[in-house]
Image (cartoon, rainbow, N blue to C red):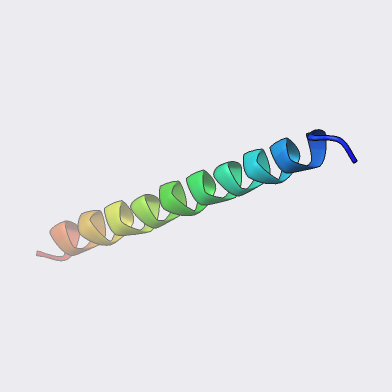
Length: 39
């Protein structure tokens, strides 16, 4: 076989983890803003 599937899977995993981390940071930021507004 070729090396391309490994590179594709690796880039997909990196992209997925990056999206997940950014999504978690967005949720954390929204929760902080919401708490600050309620105070």
